[in-house]
Length: 476
Ligand SMILES: [Zn+2]
Image 1 (spheres, rainbow, N blue to C red):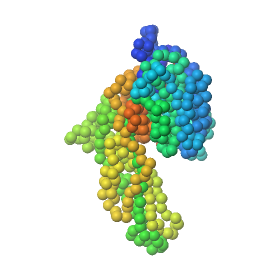
Image 2 (image 1 turned 180 degrees about the vertical axis):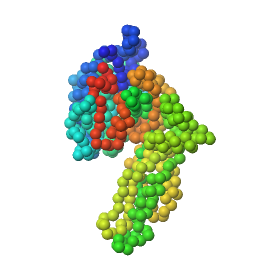
Image 3 (image 1 turned 120 degrees about the vertical axis):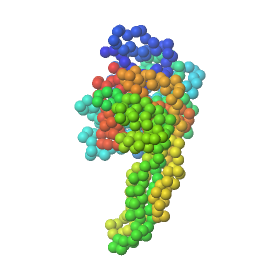
């Protein structure tokens, strides 16, 4: 089979190897040519599959994380390749790992490329799984396991790309740094934020490839490649209702539960105004060209003065993702009230998980919500775990142009769109340190696959590597 590079490896190489070195002899007619000096990659694709299975078996559910075990495993693999890595301890049992392929002795850190993936995974509801989520079971062409996609799939792909690059030993035009982070899912004491604060000098870079993008598969065909260049900002806000506590046999009008429920109902039906960011504008402009005529028409009318508002409604109603890309979103997620069935509690609380557009502020949104709720018994408390808004990564540099070119080529000419993810990733922290970070998850996934990943559902699937080797960074 003709060699074809894909995913993270192709990108890492296209971005890191001088152009002249990438040119290979013309391929036979009708055959795609391998433009990168990497040779047969089917072996490393198989290795990547076994690394992924091993990584799934190392339970890094966060909390507590225990990412150190995964870091030690990766260090062992790198050592066999003659690559020195460094394990950076953050809190007991929690570490990040980094390793570097140097271009020159005095490389410019502003050109360096980070291959980033996180080692921690979200928890599982074990009874809802048909297989052990930490056994890396292969079944029906899928590899089952927590983290198979988010983000150990990317981790294994990055590792394969990094090792393939080392084995090929080309002349690099920038340092390539493999970075495995911890605590991405909880953003606590072992997160990339703390890692940057403590160790930035060890992995300072100008560019990064991370999770957060998507290669959307529909009816067996890649519909588009979305490259994440920006992300929404998570903020948790507690709605607190106060009332008089008392015996439930004598109800009062100021019952905290009733006031909280009314406030949550109003907030749940509220839709924040549409604000366009550069990335979202570009996303819809480019998506309009591949959607059906009707949807394409509405996408092109999103900020038209006459029918913009109607178009925004149509687009928002068509997809929860699109709705959230256009505005600040609010999802009530938790309710707490009451201690006994026959006691009216004096306080009731609800958590709002808010995702702000980068550039919007929580104060403006809360002022709106206060007006909307209009109840002196209700107050809002902003929780301290809020993310920080970061500037978007540029769509105008050579690196983004390379991503567009390589991704288009690897996925049979599918359009490549810039994307503002509704979920948060480590990229925001990197962007705050002037890193042009792009989310590029190199595995074609259906909407259902994405729901498994984002919906914290009971199982995750990936396609068998034999069939989909090309997704594994280094391909068939
Ligand atoms: Zn993730």
